[in-house]
Amino acid sequence: MYNIASIDLGSHTARLLIARVGDDGGYFKPLVRNRSYLYLAGDFDPVLKRISKEASARAVRVLKDFSRTIEDWQVKRVVAVATGVVRKAANRNEFLKEIFEESGLRVSVISGEKEARLTGKGALGALGIKEPPFFVFDLGGGSTEFLLSLFPEHEKEGRVVDSVSLGAMMLTNAFLLSDPPAEEEMKALVAHIDQTLDRKCPLFPANGPVIGTGGTVVALCAMHNGISPNAVVPEKINGLVLTLSQVESCLEKMCRLTTVERIERLGLDSGRAQVLVAGAAVVARLLRHLKVSELLVSMSDLLEGALMDFLEGEQHG
Image (cartoon, rainbow, N blue to C red; front, side, top):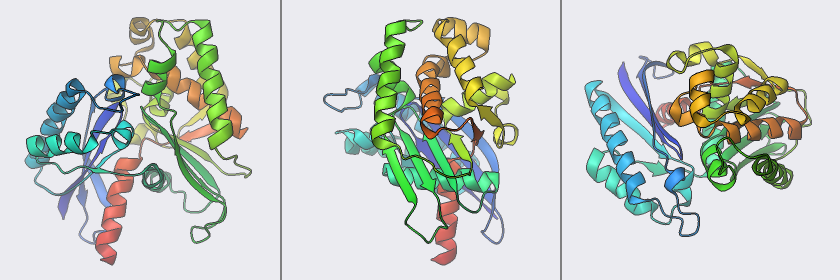
């Protein structure tokens, strides 16, 4: 038995999972979860496509903390990936080099398609879903990934993996300039989401589950079920159902409140409260686009999928 870790360096948050691998290498048990808000997308220059020095400094501080935790738990192997705006950044190589020099953690940028595949692996594994049809989406700070599968794994026909620029932080910065958001801002946001989904998101003509992962989906689920941010763990979240009407009800409440009021009245944490309106709008419009009335929630996602993928490679290597 030994300890292994995965890190997701995303547009809005950085997350760490440390797990213990069993003797046969075929399963792992989560031991530690850490999360910190980075706000990389908040400082991202959309024209020059550069991560700011301030955002880089925040990322370095967080990854150094993760590195200390990893050392404390005597982790044997770390699988660290970067997604979202890091993928788009013109200065991503310098950014990742600084992180490595300061923290000792080597982070690899993965494509949107690989992110979708690994997220699907983690979510489907946690929910015990072994066969298609299914539709998995992962809504992050800078992008949303889709994994659609209509037929068994070995058949590529009827399988779509894609990534689109619909992220909670990016959309907040681009459209929601007022606090609370103005009605015209919300209309423009919804129109942009609908246009993007119509162009880029496949339909799901099957009687299978739609599975949602990512901070927005988990926060909406916790908000609806009255689970405080400190009590949010996969054991409480995985497999819960979130309906379209519940998402739209949460969205309607949040649209009337300032960020501070969302924290005080709805129990949201400060990092999530400022971007959850845009994120909830994406979830609601996606469900309408897919013509489904509910989704299955999974807090298990890319972190678990990256570990599963690594361990499968070890077994077959």
